[in-house]
Image 1 (tube, rainbow, N blue to C red):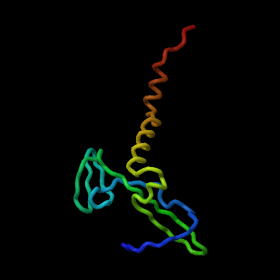
Image 2: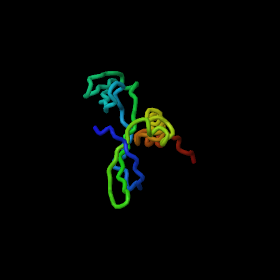
Image 3: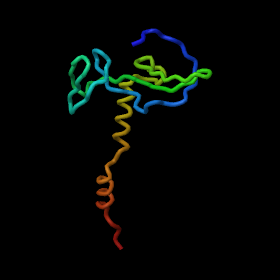
Length: 120
């Protein structure tokens, strides 16, 4: 991995991947595999509870500078200020709000059929 940092003033053309947070290993920051209530890191072998998983940002962008195109990926906590919170915090908010918004079709149809019909 290239450890050199460069400053790039460019225009963002596209988001390369819509998944911009991932569950990460607390030891090596690699993507972990969440299975049921367990988490496993394929890189370092670390295990844990999936409910305690930390999340990290991984933002892949297609950018243009002058007449050159680049695909850049920005990782980690440097994106906390951009998003206004940590990736773990954002994951909690997204999970909470999605749980509130999503209502299974069967529950909705059951709610409609269990309503009392008006009497004539």
